[in-house]
Image (cartoon, rainbow, N blue to C red):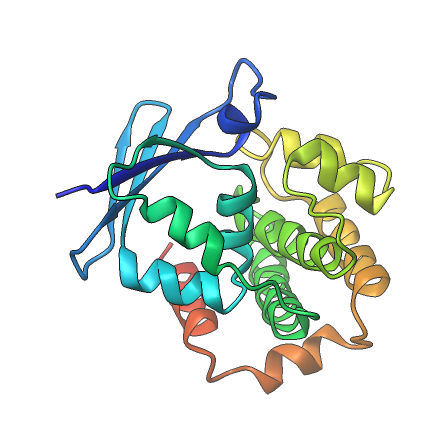
Length: 213
């Protein structure tokens, strides 16, 4: 049973465009994550204890949720407690490192599949994560497409983030990714980063997904 319902993303911020999705997060006591889609509306249901631990650990998504989310239904004040527990870290080195590794993995697979359309969502996830992590480190808290683009001050970034669902991955995405790595991380060689994280569980799940696509 859902004990709280939180609206987040562009609809919560009030800057939603005509093609914007509606993002909802449900809080329950169930241990299994549930994902549901209803047209342009997505609902993810998470266990409260897991969200609580993520909030205490300064998880980037929890920062986004706590700073910009709006409770639509929360009789037990779960969301207020999550916001109270939020502990923002001084640095997000590990989050940047994982995003660099996944971005390089995606670039490798993209270069192997030049003959067919390749979805851009994963490389854009890596790009967004690196920039968001850097903005949080500098107390700028940039989550929207416009805010991320303004923070990065990079030509063309706004357009590829805005058109993420209609434009397949192309060489410009690759160029932007490497520019972001150079500008917002300390890593000189993203291939070395990828090789150093081959046992990362999240990286392995993305690699498995790419293999079967």
